[in-house]
Image 1 (cartoon, helix red, strand yellow):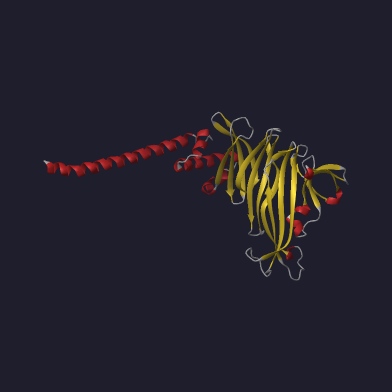
Image 2 (cartoon, one colour):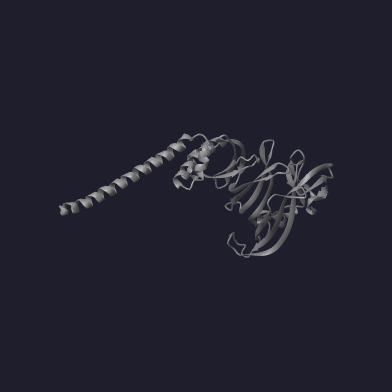
Length: 340
């Protein structure tokens, strides 16, 4: 009798393990079906639940919600023709209370390719997000943030982008852009390179140069957060512009040795201007036209000036939002914000 019991024990253990394994498979199957069905319900709606799933710590739930959000957002933004490439498209979600109504809005950045990005801004209504704004013609987006200045009720969206044109154009630009909402649309109001490197061959501008050289120019800048100073909305920029000469000018190579031959540093303060709807360095008047303008940039403070590729100009904006260049000696400074 004891022998029979001893023979039954291994059989009972095997059956018990088999039951546990079967239950695990069943439970996983039910759970997966639940996740699929849960996401499938919101397949064409950017629901709050779907967004919550995007931030889930469960990798399966996160992956399923990410693919669903990609499809919804691409259709919303008018990029249905990119659906066939959905696995190569990067998408990031940034919850921000842009309008400060104690309800989180949703900024969604989409990198369609290495040099093409777009942003959708969604507002929450009940339990779903509805597209309210689109920012197009962006480069590859690395990060997005939002800033709200309570005293003026101004909202700004800040993007960090990269434009890599090393193949063909010989430059790479990491830069910051600021967008402001005006009449229900977000438009660019500031741009500054934070890490720019370009290579230039002397013969491009002067084919008759007997011994043309390769040069490297860089712009390394620090852009402070948008803040209030003396009741003005301010951006402070500290930039260092450098010019290097290649020690081997026989052919181009980014890894070649370059020696520093020139460097300039500038501290620039830009102030938000409602009349020009932009951040400007100063206010001026075009002498030859008797027209007031906002000054956006001084070309003598750019890397192109190090290469003598530009003269002394101001980049200006008028009150019709036209942007153009005017020679420095044709501008009379009315108000300089650098002393604020």
